[in-house]
Length: 91
Image 1: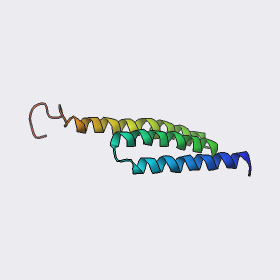
Image 2: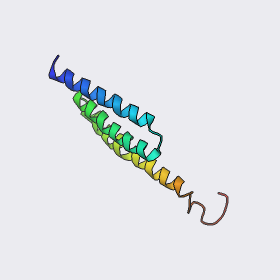
Image 3: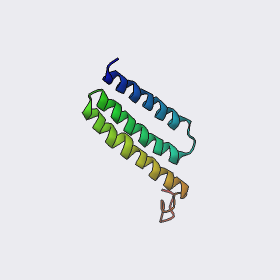
Image 4: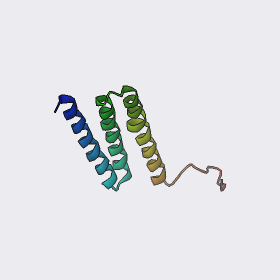
């Protein structure tokens, strides 16, 4: 088994562990954090698989933008949507 195969196997195991943890977590904030961790682990996997362009895209979108949007959405929902309709109208 070559060192590259060992790196690929380790990255796949980390990916499986991070994905399982994210799927089994019930709290949305923790899910967002675990999703960010999963994004980083996937970026490492793509780098090991010699796909640096895909790794950079995954790093930007999967571990930064998507978890941030989830956290902002959860924050907005927990605040009860205050400030959504400032004029008191229905929409």
